[in-house]
Image 1 (cartoon, rainbow, N blue to C red):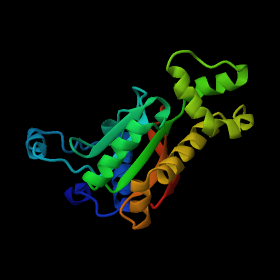
Image 2: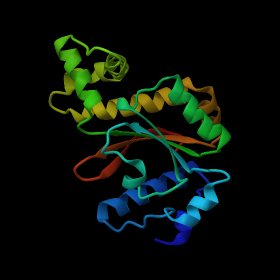
Image 3: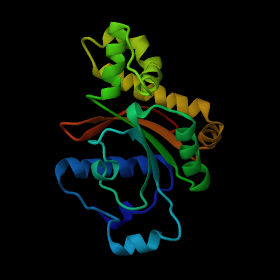
Image 4: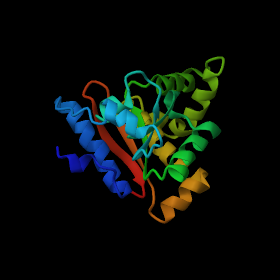
Length: 208
């Protein structure tokens, strides 16, 4: 892997390539651990310019900088259980693309997701969990309900559908994102992570 390939990308497609290249290194064990030294820390102190927003599930097995072999200042990470979207999430992502000029938003879901499993169980039994977990399940339910009948034979379908739903929601709900999508300054891509393999596969996208 050349040093050139680690430089800041000029387009959403180039940013996605950086993410996928890093994941391939993670899978193979040939990690570079880029941008993780004292010089990088010092250089970033005045300002940041991440090349991708990583909006993913809060699951402890989805440490973004590790599974994409990145370092300090590379990724602007926003995480919630089941990568559910609320005002704080939208505001955080809008900040990254508007103030930091970040060219890519990646939505990262994964197999064996607790939020997805809780939602499927709630639909099956007609009982939602208590507390604020109920809010998470209800938001995930919007995307999972239409494919529920197919999830018995293919539980990963719920994960993929929720990722696609989230991608579309970001593209449609935020005028800041929509404006930058229209002129090609940002792309939104869905990714699904396989816990056992460590690999990601693309699941839909807009503008990239």
